[in-house]
Amino acid sequence: MSVNQVSVFLENKPGTLNNMTEVLAKNGVNIRALSLADTNDFGIVRMLVNDVFEATNVLKEENFVAKFTPVLVYKISDETGSLNKILKFFSEANVNIEYMYAFAGKKDAYMIFRVSDTKKSEALLNAKGLKSLTQEEIADV
Image (cartoon, rainbow, N blue to C red; front, top):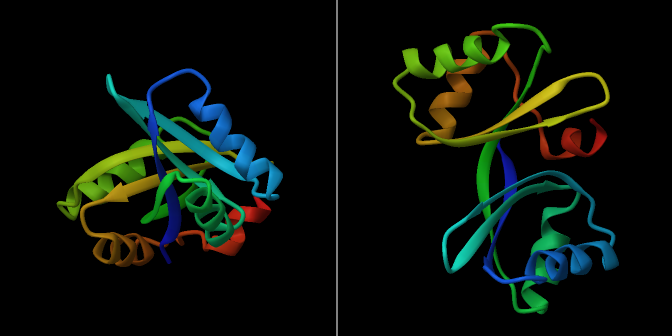
């Protein structure tokens, strides 16, 4: 099952990222994973949070541009070749990975994938015995 990632567009200037995290902190939103990409004028924060609806609502109330993006999250073993194995499955199915990032849980590592075809990718990986995490499971890892 895909998970909703929160994507936030930020002006590329000092304090903007801090302002965003302050809004989330004041509203009890816990960031589980975060990626930041930048250009000269703006940055894109991509994050998994404990409550995507609350995060998006409070950010929009504070005039941030925020939206949901479906992503797949998979637990991988912390051993040589684990990432390569899952990437091979995507490659064999001719699924393009648009971007990915990771976070560490209490015991395992987790990879977040934004792919060209979420449903196809999930079906393929389920057939290979891999189960994607749900929104609720993200909060517990």
